[in-house]
Figure 1 (cartoon, rainbow, N blue to C red):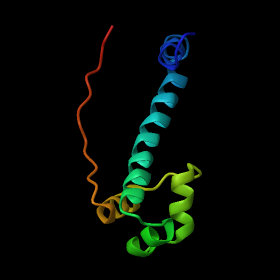
Figure 2: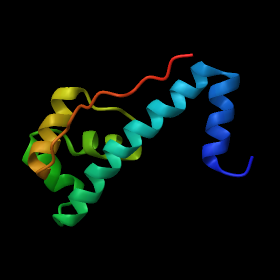
Figure 3: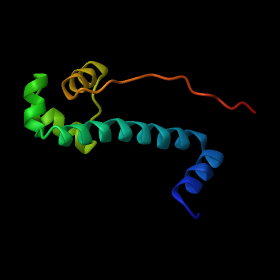
Length: 96
């Protein structure tokens, strides 16, 4: 395999279920990455963000480390404090 994209495409072809898992992990990673980047841009510590959101510091730390996934309510609370908006867009499904 030449690239990560080549590998993902290979996995999707040989095992679609694992391919879906890879896609899900990448999607969550993008969301959490945006959260971390914006927190840094605002010069907030994890504790500062947790205090603003009214959640435990450990929750922010676990979300950012990938040890837990936030429920939608917590995610929206965090995004609101960070000045971020979560948007939903339709995807184009390719049928065979």
